[in-house]
Image (cartoon, rainbow, N blue to C red; front, side, top):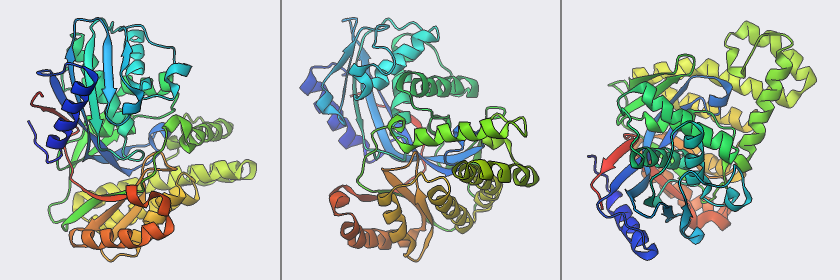
Length: 417
């Protein structure tokens, strides 16, 4: 059992939720799932690239216990205004139904719907309380929730799972992706789910989609002392399916459809050699310059990926940060997935000595940016953000924050409430 300083306030929040809403989770299971920090390739998952990232210690806690009511009853401390979400197992609204589309209920209902579609019959009722401190955009709050919910449904309905098995883990990744794709309507890939499910304390996680393999990559032993920072802008993205993310995913499909006239591609990430890229890119740019820009980002980020991985293995944090920053510029200028508050954060921290690299995180538009910084630069970053961000973004200043993150396990079972 892994303890974290944020566990105690989270436990208190969960106990209050259960008492306030009449749910019984005492003595049940308490599980904590992490956030994730992607080092590359952001937006590469639905384009077929390799992925690399770490689990980070902004968390989602979920306590649950089977009940005898035959109903699933859930409440979230982050969306308490939605009240108790309640449904009979195996009987939930259709995908993107009006009654769930604007509620966090779309996540538990989506898990129930997908499991039954995949032959996992859900029969058992349970009481569930949820609380999280993951920023609302950029660090995979929804993936953390879906993994935790899916494991709860598995457990409550007696479905066995080998947590040490990569194939079993990829089954959870696939199921949670289906919830996003088929029920919620978000065209995401596997990055968020894989980076959280397989995250290991102190290690980077390298996912190869071609053979669905996971490799743990230690940071080089001579690395300078550094910190990963989450730069929470105080803004909240409503969901990937309601953001620019969905537009970019469609554009990448359009780009592939055009390029298939010239090469047998399935995804933009299939183009890995520069001579092939230089053959294909001019035709796409002449037809659709904005799609050529999206292609340029994916190719460039994929081309930089082995250098980033090699720098991590060497312990060259400055080298990792330089590539992280370059990716950020191209996410802003070529992929156009960033947002004004995210770029304000990046502009501020870039001026601080000891900052190796910074960029927006996750789906884009809103939420959190991130940075890699020398350990002795953290206080200076906080001071710079505290001084400059309120002047540029006064509407969000009170909710903004700088969090120094540890690299942690993606999933931890805790002592019951």
